[in-house]
Image 1 (cartoon, rainbow, N blue to C red):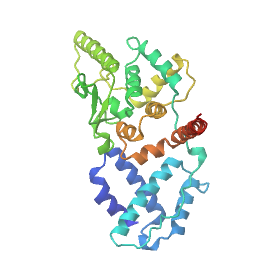
Image 2: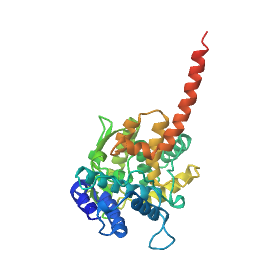
Image 3: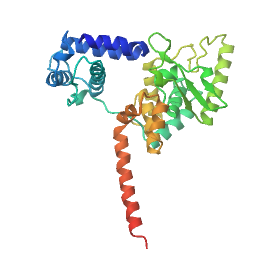
Image 4: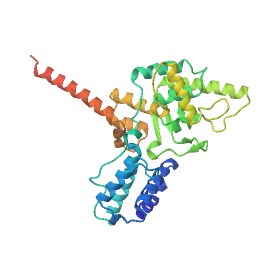
Length: 323
């Protein structure tokens, strides 16, 4: 699919962060391995569905393993956008991705894991009691629970990201855990301002004070002005974040396989259950559009809709029987 490469280089690559570029490049690799140099006009709906079937289910060989829903969905999204652009350019007349369905292996597909409100409260209580004696990661866990930031965004926070008077955190960069340096955020929508509460500001202010005391007494500096650094002057890597979260969960008496990214899901889930609008949640999380948020948290939204349906029926019964 030569057009896929040209479409990516022209319409996507110039505006993407490195992490997102890798996802598109993976799509190009997968599509090229299957379709080769086949032109778009030679691909029909059946051909494309056969591709989806093979990628999702595999064929039992190492060359064609089965894949998870999220991966199959991402590839399909990329190709579908490319095809629609080709139609707009007049290169093809029909959308061969239309009326096809996604195929994936449920065994490779993990659901979204998050803590409920009670568990979140227990974890926050534990963290607040182990901030000074625990790892700097405890601060990062707490900050993530209260903001819904991505791990790379939390790790990249600098002290000038925090506006104490306006009670906001400004997200304008992320952290490359491999290169150990700043990088661009995931997408343009990821550059955002997050409202925070006064208690989190007070906690971070105390952290900055203790951090400065430690740096001064140990004759160390913080050249990048990072908010979350260990006593060795390093930003904890992603494995350390997950390891420390496991310890915190155990300390809080919570039996969960939650990963650090699950803290972001926890934040969003709590807001949804509390009735916060999905449009605001989408902006707060830095999603490209509301459909991304809706798709990610569809199971929670459906659960809430069922509750709203029950409430509506009760209200109508009460209204009907007035007097």
